[in-house]
Image (cartoon, rainbow, N blue to C red):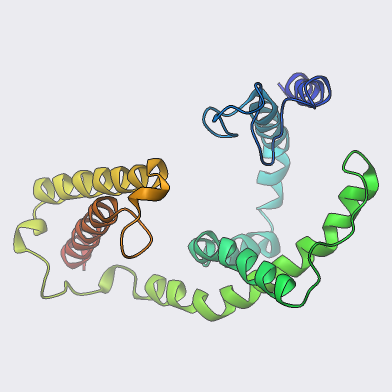
Length: 228
C-alpha cells in the first residue's frame, strides 16, 4: 500500500511529464479544460494513497508517543486553533505573495524543477509562510479558544427558535444547514467568471451558504442551551 502508490507516483510523473502538470496547467491532453482536480489525475491520487499508508504504518508509534504528557499537550495546543489554521492558511500565502510582488522580489531565480536543489529552494519560502501563518493564528486563534472555554454553558441567543430545543427539529435543521452549505460551496466552485455577483461570488450560492451557516449556528446554540 505504501511502495506501490509511491512508485506509481514517480512513474506517472516521469513517463507523462510532458502531459501531466500536478501543480498547475492541463493534463493528459494539452489544451483541454480538464484541470488537476476535475478529475484528479493518477499523479495526485498515487501519492495520496502512499501518504495514507505511511500514516497507518506510524499509527502504533504515534499512539505510544501520545501516552507522554508533552506530545499530548502539543496535540491539544494545535487542535485548539486548528480551525483558525484552516481558515487563514491561504490568507498567509496571499499576504506573503503580495509583499513579495510589491517589493520586486518576484520572479525569483530558482533551480531546475527536476533537481534536489529545487526542493531545498522551497524551504525558505515555506518558513516565511509559516511565520505569516503563525502571526495570523496568534491574532485570530484567541477567538476559537474563547469559544472552546465557553463550552456547553453558553446560553441560547434570543434569535434561536424555541422549536430547535427539541432533538428532531434540531437534527433536521442541522441536515438542511449542512446541505445548504455544501450546495453553496459547489455553486461557487462551478461558477464561471460571468457569474460573479457584487461581492465577487455568485449571489445565489453565497446566499445559500450563509443560510446554511445560520441554520447550523442556530442548531448548535439550541443544543448548548439544552445541555447547559
